[in-house]
Length: 200
Image (cartoon, rainbow, N blue to C red; front, side, top):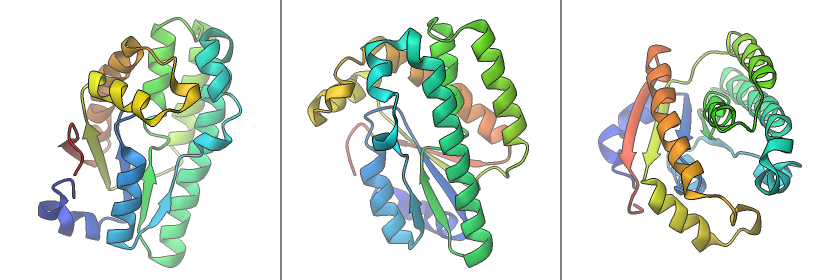
């Protein structure tokens, strides 16, 4: 699985693991498998409860900031709940995306003009204040595939609200993720990268 056997000891000793990757790369399936293998509590991104997601893809400029603030708050609550679980039970946790990568989407939407200067400033103030109050994860697993591969997988899984995602958006996210990984290493997180062009 993912070539994790060589890092299984590291993952087993870590208490907070985050799984990251571009839209369509295949994180959720892997997260479920990995959490089961490690006997960790799994925290999945609440995409099915997102009131803005479908509308964002239809009208990005109108809904980008609203969705980003909503997602940031949801991801922050989820991460706080996950770290609390570790402290109260001793069981490790695995998160499918997190508050630490939320900025990837905010940065891209700002650069593409769907989030205004004022909105982006508000978002960054919120992010900076919130992230000071939580510890960084022990390990971040980044599963990587080209934007073209992610684009094919998105269309292969047939979610209507994702059908309008352009390849250019995935390319921009791919680039922004590289910057986020640098930031996570600077925070002291062990970042492990895997080529996920082919599953398994």
